[in-house]
Length: 170
Image 1 (cartoon, rainbow, N blue to C red):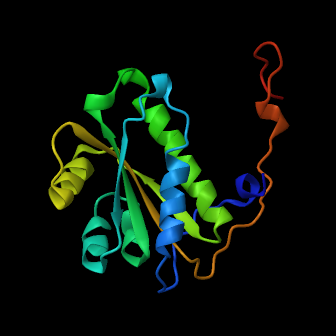
Image 2: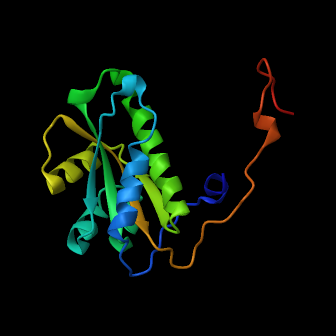
Image 3: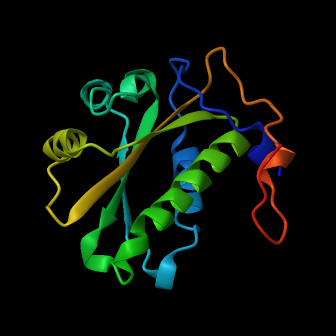
């Protein structure tokens, strides 16, 4: 549970590559996520090339950290594998969270940037030339933290917990 409580969005990274074995662990963690009807529609593009990372860093409003990452994983969904189309984003969110938690476990920092705007999706598709049945979901920038660290900040708020029925917080 330590990874859950200490994970933070890390946006600056050391100029140091992430080992292939750790990238493999991150991808394996992603694919262990729960998936509706076991559709597992996820696909991943692993980006380590500095030129590609620089171009990708302009994909979303918050993706500037991509340029300084050692590796960014592009999370995509394959429409052809969807059995429960209405919940593919739930599956992808679970895969993203698994990557983030495994990154902490491996001593890495990471930050999740969602791909919500059509312009962002088009830029990512143009960069990686994937077919139209592939949908981008998120970018996760990963590397060894440079300054910021994963540390516990208590975010528990008892006023947001309701038992048996809704009650307004006081």
